[in-house]
Image 1 (tube, rainbow, N blue to C red):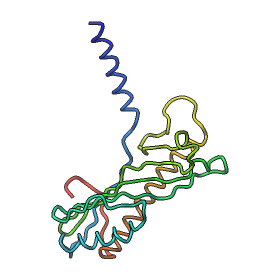
Image 2: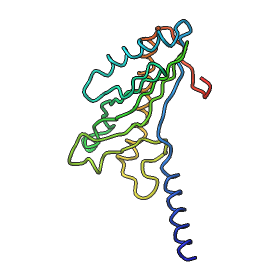
Image 3: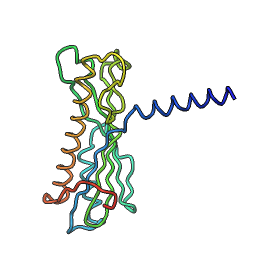
Length: 186
């Protein structure tokens, strides 16, 4: 009975800890291209990905024209807001971009945003890791000014990167695509 209590308390702690983490930041939209079917759209999107992800730190992870799914891993350079004491945070934000193609539209989802500092000496201390919708980087305890200033900036820069991707994709597939907020029955 005592063992059951301990296990129950451990499970309670684990579930509370998971809830405090927040949901990973994710952005998604549906882009309508009424005059193009999936067979026409997919090669256009793949060509866009080949040009956009031509660097060594960005790779096409999945290329599935039959099911209309293209998944890319990418990264963008991140500079923290603030003076010299923030330079240890500068680095990269890695992310996953998923494009699902259907006739007349495609859905773009960007997520798995993960910050890592370029400063090898401070990797453990100043890499923020997975970016979530949490309000604060650390929910409890002392709040370093660099955390409170950088955390919202990281989320903002992820959203800006996403919007730039959407505009670039829209231009690549028609130039006059209508961008919709996503919903489940896209």
